[in-house]
Image 1: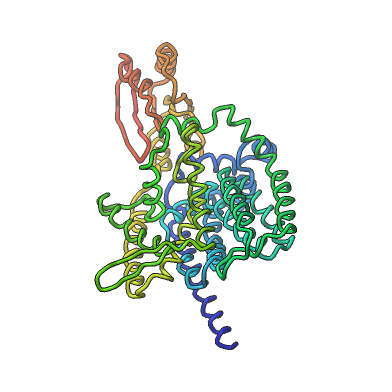
Image 2: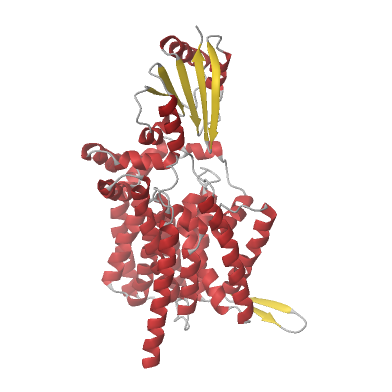
Length: 498
């Protein structure tokens, strides 16, 4: 008994250490870089008064992220404060993954899983972004842990927690619906199984009582989702996410491979791409060890897949949502890495299981060491190099060099959210649609600006439409006076002649 208690204390302290590492990596340089385009919308909503916020919460997406963010920034609305909510959600995800992985495997695999998520470049990236992805991932993990407890124990409090956390996850980001999909399909599998599972079973025999509780819980979840479903349907009719189709198109099988690379090393790998794909092989070995068993003899290497119920649960958590998004995106493209980060935790759980079960142990430790080294390379790039659009620098440059007869033109006009967060100068700001290509309208706008102002600051971001810029360059009354570039931003100055 004492030995078991001592082991429990050691595991607790290991988890605490992993959480400390996760907190450091997510808080380090949290506010150093400028907000980027999407974060500008978070900042805009966070600064709204109650009447404006109420309209957003009733008619726009993701109220469970924007509502607490609006309250959060009453303590401060600088970059650090805006991103801190995501950082905390990322930190809380570590113990949630530990408990989920422990329920699906062992304490050893849970520790490795928590460590891999703690140092994950992709998870750290979105834990340092003032957007909803880290919070939705946290709620999705919480809902999955509650689901496990509910199907095992059958207690109403667990079912209630599952319903509440599922609704919170959905209202934070709609892709949480795919987690509900995987859980529903897993219940269907448990019904078909119809017999007691072995030692590694997720749940005992599925009884009529458990099915009744699950069914009633689904009704409750649906009722909680109705407000968000209404908004989602309305926005779908309005062309929500059509920009994804225009910019990225339908995903191919290569997109799945890219997702695996992003899940493993993030998107900040600085070295040769071939080395990145080679390093991905280290993760593949751990992944295979998580779903099967390697056999090594003097003359050959064998591999046997062992799909026990716990690994089937984790694979379903990982693969069913991603496959569903992939299939849906063939008709309505919506496949982006940041939308899929909700399904990163089961990937880390499978890797953690592989690290715990791989034999010989020396091989497991060598693989983990190499993975930590490769992850460190990505993290060094994440922290050392500029990663986000420098709207802070662009706004400061215009403030320092603008004169009273200048005007600022933003293309695309939606950049006004992030530009307005930084720009404090007196110059008028005019937004122009990034899709505007009508030469008559472009000519009228250019002529009007040339007649009213002495200089035009043209700021272009998140558009490949050069029509307005080409018109300014062709205007005989205008003379280019300078250009500046930053990540994702082009800045040009035009002077009116005469």
